[in-house]
Length: 197
Ligand SMILES: [Zn+2]
Image (tube, rainbow, N blue to C red; front, side):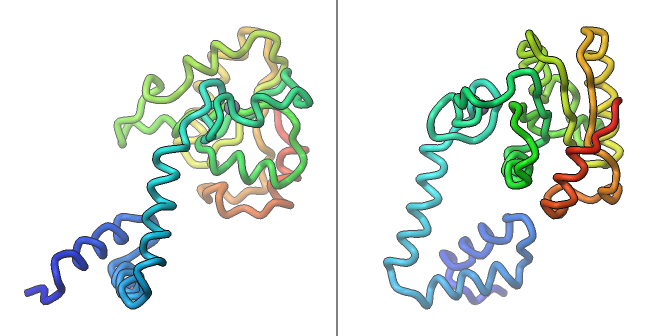
């Protein structure tokens, strides 16, 4: 029998849904918030509301942005001839930190994964194909998993016949590791030494 007040149980359950947060951490976070003043709780809830209300997808690259198109798509100093294809907006953040890339981006919104019911039509592949005019190179920066690999091959089959170079981040990134956990230096090197697909 759970003796916690229902409101507290609800907060714990909400925290426990976050990635990497187990029941124990969720409980600790909820108790921590409860022990703090009203102001701290309000600030957190306001920050959550604000990202939900003010942040949307860029209509060109599908990065998160407050202004559409996003600052990267609006930047006239970037190279229009290269598009780097990523799984999620977080990867853009990491690639930007390497200072090795000055082209544009395209967020697919995932990778092809039949077991999870994700087919090509669930990803922003059509939107990518519409952006290929004038593009000379597509750089694929997907997680090096089986699904990432299958997605890369799928994209190469669609794009290569159009005479566009397709490359992907060089190995050196341990297979199956999420790009999220690769350091900037390794990622920068993988960007420089990319392989032709
Ligand atoms: Zn954009």
